[in-house]
Length: 201
Image (cartoon, rainbow, N blue to C red; front, side, top):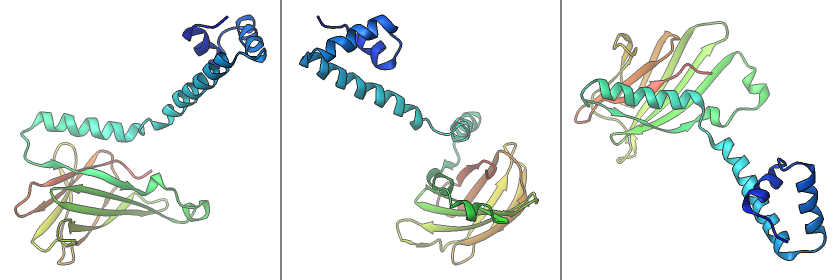
């Protein structure tokens, strides 16, 4: 006596019902080596399927990516959408640090041969955000040397804040916290690099 794939799926998920589950359990207990092997294999499949749910990307990142593609479709391609390579919120600080008065968030993006390192912060009970950033030439492994500027704008291209990039590749922006902002890094010889920003969490 052996069982169908559907029976095994229902058994390892616990949806077979008492009698079918009891029949399979009794059969395995009677020493059928083939069914013991099948049981282990289907258990592994079930664990893998359950674990896969945890691989779902955060909703806010999915929304930002969709927003980026939608924005590209609405206008000619004159800029490059940056790729997120690091997000400090994926590696939370210890509870005692998180409870401090200053909330800090770091993200790192790459595009057009540039690495853009951004540190966000704001005082508790304040809507004023600060971005301390640095732009690197990835290939030269050094701060960006040519003239560059950064611009913070809304989805409708309204400029919120601008800053020049220093000879060390550094810049500072202060602005009132808003949703759906875009940070653009503009430097000679490259497409502007655009970074979609969600509000720090």
